[in-house]
Image (cartoon, rainbow, N blue to C red; front, top):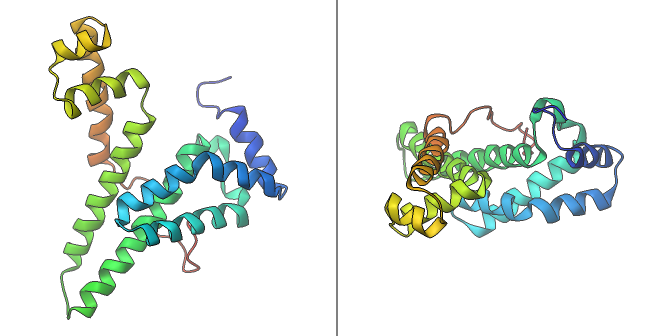
Length: 195
């Protein structure tokens, strides 16, 4: 399989969805509901809004199974995460704009700063959850448990050079969350579904 070819499982899932197999949607939900709801909640900070985004994302996938092109979109997980981020950010932008209008004004820049911050947080969370386990473990030890690279190396049973390498690679991946949080995201269509 070529490096950029999506996993066979993703291609088969897309084909099943395109045929209208309800069981495929159920399997997709089982695989990604936690990712979708978690990402939406991270952006919106509200369970009810995250539930709504979760319904919208899976509804969009069911109604538009051909929107996922494995050759163009990459992995199904990444595509679902992008749909979710796009829809959650769109909903946040609408909610914040409405809240500013109800309060008698406010700066559109304030809305965009909040939206940008939420998008960065969602992208960082996705990056950490998707990175290889050795990198994630090193970052968790160093940043959540406040271990230095020597302690991280000892805890992981690797050399200090390897611990530094893992931390450096993990941080490089995380740095893309801030520099490119909304890459490829466009507002959903007026119908309310992700695009």
